[in-house]
Length: 167
Image (cartoon, rainbow, N blue to C red; front, side, top):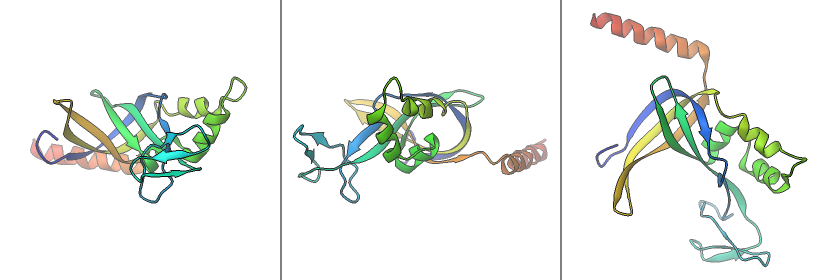
């Protein structure tokens, strides 16, 4: 990820922290547009990218989480269907829960609180980005899947055999 091209890798990790603030947003309902809409507070929402106003929107997920494995932790960004797979709920369902959340109904918080410390296999992309003249590595989740213990054990045994051949 340090050069012009991103690096891709897979890791078995758990979410240690999920930033609950701002993980849901109201997005443009147009096909292939995921831009955040501006609430005009008159029943309409404006998409700056599409330059249109509409009465509806779609909920989208943009999750910032810290993944940890045996060696360290890494902050990642998880969008769309990958975020839905990680959380175990659709953006629409979470948005509905969020708007109804209160002291009596904590389903939104409960679902987000269930995410940490469950193991997943993540496919990650890391690339260098420049923001405000500052370079930093940005890591995004490309795919997420629950750990299949049988497959994972077979992979570990294969890796051990490969390492044994080096001795």
